[in-house]
Image (cartoon, rainbow over the protein chains, first blue to last red):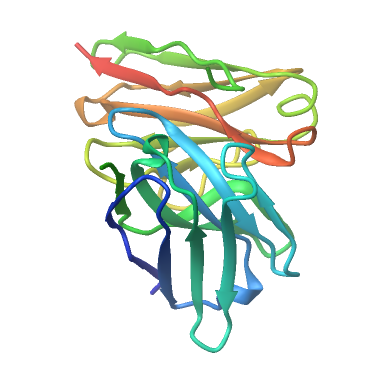
Length: 123
Length: 110
């Protein structure tokens, strides 16, 4: 069974750093396209970052230069290192896996989501 | 303001057919496939439609998707009370090198 379990969220002051973790089971993180998607309270979904199976990474402009996505293949775990945090980064952060059929992968089609971890940036 | 544009709200009565639109541009919907999500209150989103009109296993055939040019639509037929949720469209954007979401449409079943 595929499972994604996030951890690492919490209350952090503006300018601070936080690292989110996403422990995966039932599949191999390094063989899939893995993303972080966030949702501010009462707002819509916002894609944050993706890491491809080949290791390429992409970021939303709103986090570029501040956030870093990575993975630990030995632990089958995805990470999001968040630096220089701002109030507008306050959100539930979801770890997510893109859907792959037997023939193709669809970057923007996410078939598995974690339960989410809340990050609150406030003084 | 989201890159993909959706109406903020939609409504229908049980049994009715409703459609939700999603408008984009040549760099996203115009050149990539569209995906749709359903999000019930307090839960993670669920993939409803991928690759414009494909349903993952387990998604009822009451849900269907279509795309034409730089716009896409999600149709829900035989509307049920449990369909009351937020719906989002998403696509890859070649100019931004990013996944872009619509702002979401809140569907109310009257």
